Image (tube, rainbow over all chains, first blue to last red; front, side, top):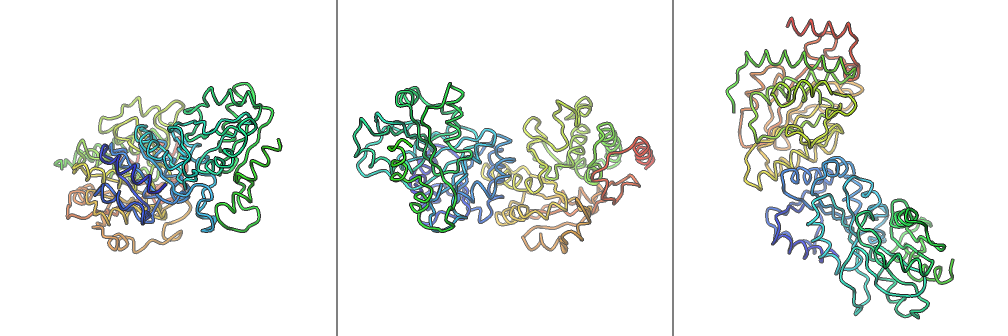
Length: 303
Length: 262
């Protein structure tokens, strides 16, 4: 999605004036943006705390600013700067973090982002955007630019099966219908479910919904989702994020306040490093039981 | 830059100092020491130097009282406003909350934030062809914060020469003397090495302050102001405890007497 975000921002820079700051990252990805933006593209160096404060200072002067780094360096290192300098002033600063969840795989735990949107959503005025597919990035970037408040963009690697036709981007989308229990997934991990669900009998398989914007108070579940959950009596949330602060907790809260959580409710989420060993993104998903094979096995057994 | 009227400024400073003492006494809160060490600079800047478009960032947010009193002396806050200091339902808490008053743009209090904000504002101004200066007042202990040095590097690298950092060098920080907690000397040389123009001045001498602020040589500027914590009140001067303690009635009366006599 790095290239997609670069293209989307290049296009945006032709229509809007904003600054882009990178924490010394973007090799083989952001060069076109640097070219397009000229002096408005700033390599702020390996100094993320200052980068976020600078972005806030720029936004306070009426110049919206995007900052970019590997996800944990973008949201965790400068957390207090995001909290105090950006969010408390409700400034138009966007934090783009590359490599959500276990995307950096065997690069190790320091590069993983397992609590990013949960941590960001604790902050006032913050909205989080989690594209599931490469095609989501451009509409999300445009939407973020149109929303003059703090925003967090979690980027990953698109896993959409080749040839699969997506419905147009929306904060909630039904990707596949099915008469079985409902799966609500967030982020690229949803892509791994598509091929497997498509091969199943529609009368038995789960319906797949994808959520891409949080908090849910700004992106409430649509009536069609509620109807699917009610009809099937089952809901499983899948996310490459810790349970705390994730979609599962948020959705359970919304459903509880609306009258009740379905009889069958499950939450597949990141569990850190159970074995203490490291590997690819798929290795970590498997270890947590959030990969499509493991999760669908549990769901279809009705556990 | 405005033509200074130092005689009048001296009277304004005395009045502001008395108002600051009153405000802190009535609210029963501390932080008075660092307010008294930085009040001269804040007041001079706002009343004798700054123009309408200039930006001031108080990075040492614990000197909020001095900022409020400065804005009061400049006619930007009322006496009624100051009466609300530290009370319930106030806009004037112990550390400034930004966004409601043009003279208080940012919420500060956690040290090491103001300079990055100032740098960003200065960068945006440059990109938007606005040459108005940006002033940032930091404490000295605040330079223990790594984020400050990140910002200093950024400011120097981009030669944001419209940024002036004022450092309240009162030699005392939260739980010790700055030289004992984390020795920063040679302090000025550090800024020089980064690429700043460095001026060492007496932070309680308005003429030196004004001269330092007036000087322009095309580099970002670090003005290291030698100051005294609790300046003007004998029992507070250079005492760490006046970072924290509220005044008793007797202490307040003595402080007022000393300031009035000075």
